[in-house]
Length: 279
Image (cartoon, rainbow, N blue to C red; front, side, top):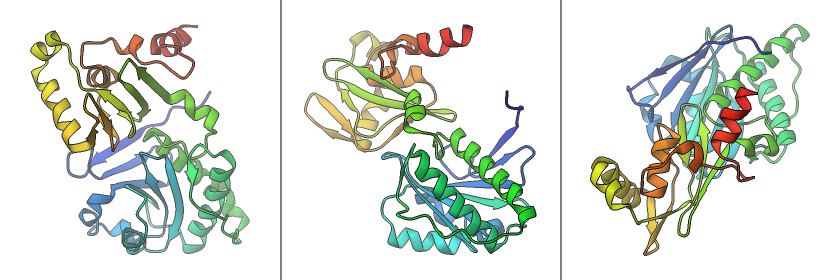
């Protein structure tokens, strides 16, 4: 059994959708989680131009690009101009600026190799970078850093070193006559994924009791969806604080998330999570 770890998150602008700085107990690294639209808000931080291993992620399509840089902010601004696919960057830096250029190059090579082998995400790196030499005393330390980086990414909902078979256990579905929604847990969020089709119909009793939720539903349809007439296709991921709120949104009525959301095999959350935990 793995030992307990403490993961702390600092919300730079007080919003879960903004820039986050994450630290992990008994680890020498910190992670900067940066939405693409917030890049300019991070440029004043000294750490952001330290040597870094970084991940560029398309959260809707589950795509991943792995890179390294001696000055992360300069590199990511270049990617902002040259790469269209990503919406989120995760920069892994040393807590005390002890990583060197050779260290992050080694981490990049090892990370790409492991990610391509497991293929939980669609890895966009075409080749594994050549493995540079580092002092043998450093190898264990760098492997530990990569494990910690993977744990942080996993907490955010991105399985960079899991197999597709393992990753599918985190996917949940709601299907009705007009709704075909797909979602997954991502750390402290439950995310309905882009491409989900949502029936526009709502139950009258639900509209009456949940006026604010109904208004938010309409706002999401307008901002993040394409109108199909009697349904809406989501063009972007939409995050909710719980599976229950996501279920209300997907179904347009009051639901019990434990029985509404089902996995690929048709088993409910109640069967998979609660009952498996009780065994």
